[in-house]
Length: 36
Image 1 (tube, rainbow, N blue to C red):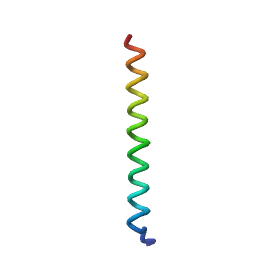
Image 2: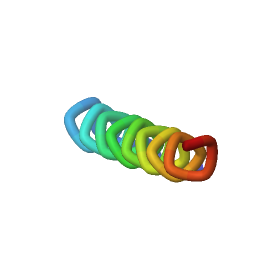
Image 3: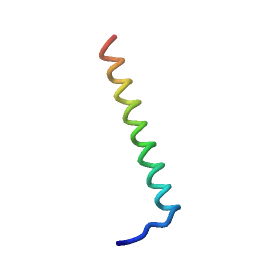
Image 4: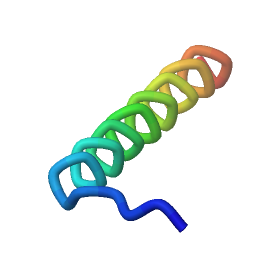
């Protein structure tokens, strides 16, 4: 089993959450446009 350094793990986690929030924001924008 390969051990990841804490810095790399934190970077990947932060990037993942940023992308996830960005996608949620986009979906909310699209659904808002569809509603109006």
